Length: 255
Image 1 (cartoon, rainbow, N blue to C red):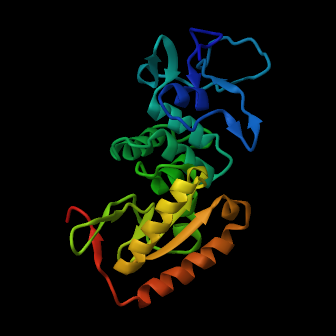
Image 2 (image 1 turned 180 degrees about the horizontal axis):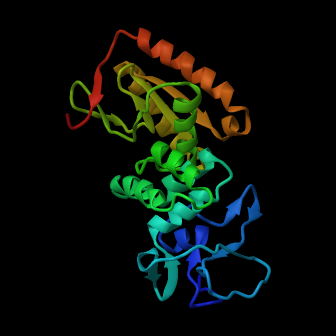
């Protein structure tokens, strides 16, 4: 994805895509988003369809080269995506995507970066989102489920994608979310869970979880299309059930 203006860095979803974020495809609710250019305060960009600009100061560390194309750095990309997101939850999804698999220290660096720009538009949203973000989440659906879990259901922040084993040392699985105190596990079933092979694997894992004393809650895109309060009530109910389970034949692997 080469820029029409080689001297002007790509930003937003296009920068994230070139930085290796696979699910940044420039589409939102079926609509193609414009390519974002970051010309700084004085760079010139001719207006044309499919292009948007974000005019904010850029320092030297804000721009990196990806196969000959100038793009905003991961830190600056996450900052700009979060501060221009529709709301805090959307901002958390953007941060989770950009920082997926990276050192958790990136979240502290993002908060510090935002703190150095206190008067920039949307910086308060960045601060709130960075405090809720995780570098361990593997999909947008997982991020959304985690936010319903903590912000609406009121449960403590869960562990994310941790491996679980049974008392015999056998691997049970890696749930998207885990409340270790109660044994409640949360799973978001995205598009990849629709195949027959994956559905079979999900069924087997659910049986292993139940036998070990884990309570499994599953959510999907259907839940995202409904009011999140409906899922929050299911999470609260599942948490209550998990607390009543007397069998705990599982532990976080590696302990």
